[in-house]
Amino acid sequence: MSIWGLDENDAKVGMETGQNSSRSKKMKMVSKELPTLSSHAHRSHNKPLIKTTQSCSRIDILGKRSGIEKVTEKPLLTHFQKERILFRMNYKLLLLTLIWQYVHSVATNVAYYLHVQRPPLTDLGFDLLPALSKNFQIVSEIMFFICVFLTVGFLISPFFYPRRNLYFVLMFTRFAGTLVLAQTLRIVCFLVTTLPGPNYHCRPNSPDYAPPKTLMDIFGRQDAFFGCGDLVFSSHTIFVVLCALVWHKYCPFKWVRRVVWLLVFFFGLLVVAARKHYSLDIMVAWYTVPLIWIAYDHYFPDKLPIDFDPYPELPQRFRIDRNFKA
Image (cartoon, rainbow, N blue to C red):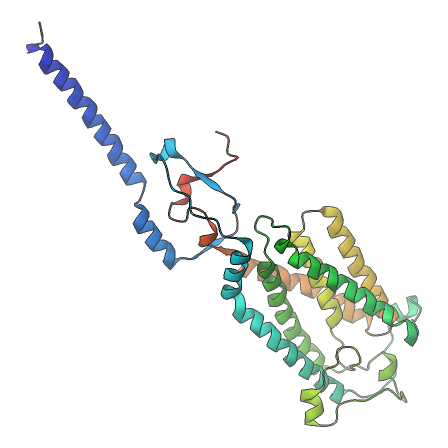
């Protein structure tokens, strides 16, 4: 029999040809949608960084939607290897932070050299809080080291309990960058205006008053606890507030963040009671350091290498989390 002037064999051939042409059209559409793996992998070397907005866990491929049947998984990097990559990315900032601690120390010695012994200024915190004696001033230092050591333990915790997007170098780099900016502002503040030190060894007729007298003393003395003149704003409060900000940004537990901020407030009261700083020095640090942190986070957000992705050679639209539900 014939169909419209064609026999059965010609009809079958025509149907098969139509099916093949429709398949070729689909393959062309997929090839246009999906770039080649080699070309995209080559471009990924030119842009090695991506923002840390997605999970860095294992990722599957949308095989049915993209036309890819199977992609070979790359071996995942260990946590230590990722930390080493982040260190190579940020070692310059970490080195600058280390050098800046010496610059800050020299600046405090200059402030001590310029300081003049006078009675402390009138301060509302001094009127409201009873003064701690010299023997109990160490209480504020104990509170300071408690906050610092707890934060150090939290910073190194990813080495023992790895979590998504939580890395020691990433957290410490943000801490260090904010610290450098805050210390720079602090140096400018206490050098342009010298205030009389309220601490016991800074007052007139104190036998413990020993300012630097030579250039060797200014560039060689290292003393973070018994200086005078470096007041606005409090250096110890800078460190404690930065510790709280690290907990606030990276710790998932709200109650921990609240406890840390209570410690910051209590530490400020202890510093004023110990007469190491004026209330002004503490309050300026309380709002200056968080503002610097927010600005630094806005202009320099956390970034992770694209090598942390198991499938860096594929575009983002062809990746999906394993927990994805269609």
